[in-house]
Every structure is written in structure tokens, then in C-alpha cells.
Length: 420
Image (cartoon, rainbow, N blue to C red; front, side, top):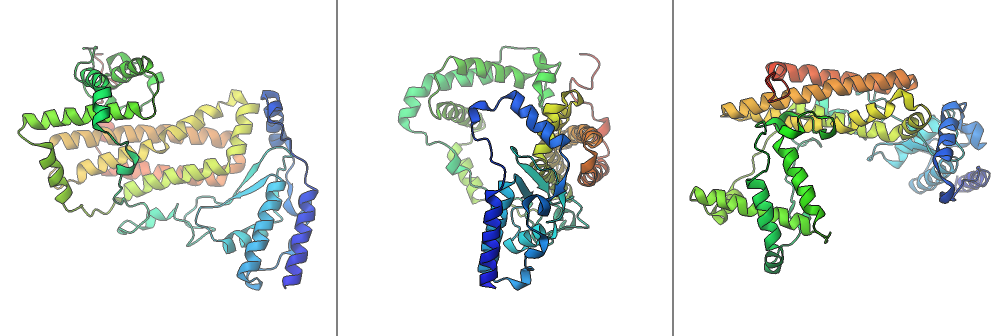
């Protein structure tokens, strides 16, 4: 078998030498070239991988005939061959070499567009949890079945953010003192006095599309901060040091008013036992959706980019932006809604915030569903995977409406009121 594997790898290497040469002159890569690539992808006729590479499927031994080292060497050569012909199978992160190899040879006679100058991603998953091609190797769809599993990969763990924060020294305090004081004043004394209280808590965060920016304290503060930062020369992590120090001092001042020392408060937090909380199925489904979107976009990048370039009138770019904008937004708002209503003793404020968070999550889901439906119209060859994403999102919407039945009728400050 070793002799045969060696000969097969030599055959693959010979096929690699026959692959079309790629244009490596990046200086010549302009909009016209990009448009040609898009047309090549959209107008190209799909062909079998075996026919285009010149290597028939029967040449590849089955997995159970290969030793570990042989499998690794053969898979490496196969992936190099695919790359030479601008193909890439988009596998989940934890898929083993054995599963990858078997999947590739099983689909060696599948047909795909071949672009000589641009990479084509080959979709490997339709996001159907009932028909998974990688059982036991991928958790993207598994969240529906783990409602009571605290060890599930989507359950939150304890995260140490300390190594992400810059060190703050006494010298920093002296050199940045003026900036820290300016920042504190900016937060405590916003210039605009006509803000709608709480409007920023239940918006979709897309300020450029918003008609209420002049009434939003968050937008106003960010605008003033941008203006403040433009007057300062960029200096490593200076800005984040100023923000962190100013925020810390403001918290200390508020605690002091209540007779609480910061050190005592931190000590009490450190001594508390971390709450062991099993994540709600809604949270898992929302985060699973976000993972699916990531995988789908990675697998269909060339498809989307080509259509955006070649068919700008279809506005696929706008639909893609909507999907990516809400990809993480939806899990965040659902998490806030679930946590607010899951407290043993939740206050009226917790209930109010949970209803508002659920409403904006539902509105984000509504927009995402419309965006996916539009993309399906323009890319019907991706029907299977898009329909499964639509089913996932529709199920999430339905269950969120049942969990927070008051969400749809929640009146968001400013947006849902008529007196502004």
C-alpha cells in the first residue's frame, strides 16, 4: 500500500503542475478584474472535480484501507490539489482528517464551477440537524437537543478579561489626568438636554439609519467622544486607559455616596460563589443561529461577492449586511431578555427591560428573515441551506414570542410613541 500511496501522491503532484497559473500581480487587481472574476463564477459551467483535475475517483483508497500516516499524507496532497484548482471544502473546525478525506472522495465526482483566478468555496453542510454530514464532529446544530446539558459548548463559562486590559500606573494617572477629568465631565454633563430617556436601550444600533439620533444620549456621547479623540494624537492604548480610569472613578464616587468602599465591594464579589446556571434553550438556539450564519457566509463568500459585483441592482449587499449586523445582536438581546425574566425575584424594571429586549430581538429576527428570503430569490441553488436557516430563525421567533408574549406590544421610547 505504501508504494501505491507514493504513486498516487506523485499523480496528484503532476496534476498540480497542470493547474492554471494564477495571477499574482496584485497591482493589476482592480474593479475590472474583480468584475471578470465575478462573471467567470456566475457564468461558468459546473464540472466534475475528477474531470477538471484529471484524477478519477476510483484512484482513492477507502479510509479503512489507510494507516494514520498514509491518510494524513494523502489528505494534505488532496487539499493542495484542490487549492491549486481554486477549490476549498468548507469543513467545521473540529472535523477529523478521516472524516474530511472520506467526505472529499465521496464528493469527488460532484460538479462545481471552476474559476482560474479566484477561490470557490464548496458548501459541505445544509444546516439540517436531522441529517448532519458530520455527526459527532460538529456542534453547530446540536444546541436544540441540549436544553438541560450544562456542559454544552454554548453554555457560558467563566472568562478572565484581566489579560485584555492595559496596565494602569501612577505615572499614567499623572499624564492622563486632564483627559480623565474631561471624559468624566463629558459623561456627567452631556450637552444635549432633549434626549429621550432609554431610547438607545431598544434600538437596533444602526445610527446612520436612525431618525432619533438628535434625541439619543448614547449617540450624543459617542459623537462628543469622537470629537474629543480627534483633538488627541493616537498613542497606543491611551484612549482605553482614559475610559477605564474615568469609569472606575465614577463608580467609586457613586459607591462612596452610599457609604460603600470600592475595595470592600470588590472583595465581596470575589468571595461570592459563581452562579451555576444552565443556559436557556432560547439562548442556545440564538447562539447556534449565529454560528450557522458564520459558517454559511464562509462557505458562500465567492457566491455573494460575485453577485454583489456583477448584479449590484439586486441589493444582495444590503441583505448580507442586515444578516451580519443582527448575527450577534439577536443572541445578545435574547440573553438580556431571558436573564431579566429568569431572576428568582425580578423587579418591575427587570420585567420592563426584558420585554423591550425581546421586542428588539424579534424585530431583528423579522428583518433577518426578510433578508434571507431575498437572498434565496437571487441564489436559488442554495435553497437547502437557506431554507434550514429560515426554519431555525422562524422557530426561534415563535419560541421567543411564547416566552415573552408581551414583547410585541412593548412601547419603545421614541420609536413606538407618537408624541415625538
